[in-house]
Structure formats: structure tokens, C-alpha cells
Length: 381
Image: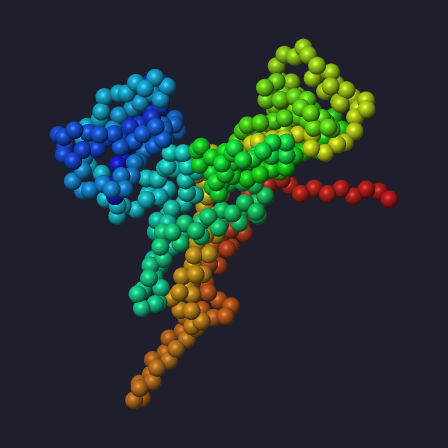
């Protein structure tokens, strides 16, 4: 594998004309260059990022590469860059090393295996005590990171990985494709139920609290009558105002209106004949962070520490499963060895305890930046 590094100078000026990077390959420096990227894999440029990378999975050390800029709307392509060689696959890849970007059309990784291996587990050999001395693989690291992300989503009550919710109460789900994890082109990852109409909430500018947040965007918002007839497409009529952080939606006109729905809205708001009924609102929406680049550094760090704890527990058992001490005696000579591992203490217990302490302190300071403060009311008897 070859990794091609691309540095975009004056990114703001480049983005005036182009929005993508194309990568080309040749067997020799002066040979003919053929584009490796296509409509799905061309690298999308964003104003916040000047360094980009492309992985040629079948690249050889003798291959040469060039790049160019492209405008996806007009198909105008710039001149090619100078020829360059790609780095070798042995290079460490991750946010720690400043050379990881999410693949086009995918969410990416919160941290890579190299981030955990060489930063959070620095100095620890990730091998087992079996005869083959098996390595703890990248796939195993990735699984621990995914599990840690999911557990923090449950702990904070929010979505971190990007998710796309769809409601199928009043329509068939067969034309739509579903994937376990978000990627470009997939219709949905999760299903969501309808939301009830509540006159009390409606008096607060048509307030609805979505079940999942933070909200990236609302793709569909339909208001249905008690007999499931459509009253309004609220996106087409510009009736959606979203507080993205905690997923609150308010239905209130954001543009001009001179037709029926406002009279219905006014009647509902005033409470004349208003009553609660189920299944009034259907929303299709996306939540989480747009890709792994946008996860806040503090949240990224604390999740990585939790993933490391999970990894250290497994590796520690792999090194010395059920082992705490050993002694050997021969002809009057003796040797003994004791580890920190026991039924209640892991082999890497000191580092695990330190990370647990740091996670606890972070949660005490930051938890309610990401999840709502729990409030309860006590009424008089």
C-alpha cells in the first residue's frame, strides 16, 4: 500500500474554483498517468483542512503519483502537480500523527488502531502469551473503539456516530436501503416512531423533542391529522426551526404564508377544540457528528481512554490469564515472580486506574455539555 500526502496551499483561494482532488498513477515518473479516483472517491476539500491523504491499496514502491484539482459542478480540472512517490504502508496512521482523514462518503474512525497502540498504550507490547505470540490486530482495536463509542452514546444520551433515522408509519420501507453504519448513499441506519400532538407543547410554538440528538439536518417533516391525512409538508412550507444541540423542533412559519395551514395553526395554538392525538408528526433526520473529524477533542480523548481500558483488560489476560505469582526452586536456588494481576486486579491495573480516574473527572466537568440536565418537579399535595 502507498499513502499519498497532499498539501493544499491557500485553501480558501483554491476552493473558489475547485472542490475536489483527483489522484493519478504511473509506473514511471515520466510515464502516462491514469486517474485512480472516480466520482465516489475523489477527495472533497473543506476550508478547515489543508492536508489530505489517499491510500493506494495495491501501490508498489516503484509507482509514481500526481494530483489535480476538480470542480464537481463544471468538471473543470486544473493542471497536474509534480510527480511524487507514495509513503509505505508501515507508516503509522492516525489523528496523533496528523495524517488521518475520513474516507470519502464514510464517517471514519474516532481514533485509529495506531492512535491507541502508540499513544494511549505506549510502551506496551500488544501480544499474547500463546505459542504463536499473536498480535492484537487493528481489527480488534477498531472493535474496542466502536464499543467505547456506543457505550458513551448510551452514557451521555446522544449520538456520536452519524445516524440517519426514517419513519415508516405511513409508508412502505421496501424501496429504502439500510446499513448498520452510516455511509453516503444509504437511505437510513435506524427507524424512528411518530410523535404525538400535544396542545400544551403546541402552545410553545409547536414544540417537539426528538428522541435523538445532536441533529445534523431534518430531511422530512410531515404533519398529519388525527385520521392520518396530511395537513402539511413542513419543510416545503418552511415551518421548521431546529435547536440542533438537543434535538428540539419548533413548527412556526419562517416565510410568507397566505393560505389555509395558518388558520389551522392558529386554532391549534389558541386551544379552540385542540386535543391530544397520536402519530401527528413524522420526521426523517440525521444525528451525530458529520464525520469523525468534527468530534470535539475532549470527547474524543475520553472515549479513547475507555477503549484503551477495554483493550488493556483483554491483552492483560492474554499475557497472563489467571496468573498472579510463580516460584521455581532447583538445587537450593530459587526464583520467584509476582504480578499485579489477581482475581480483582488487572495486569495493567495502574494504567487502567489512572484512565478511570481521568474519565470520571472529565464526566464530572463536562457531562451536561452533551446531555440535558435531569430536572424533576415535586407538586404540592
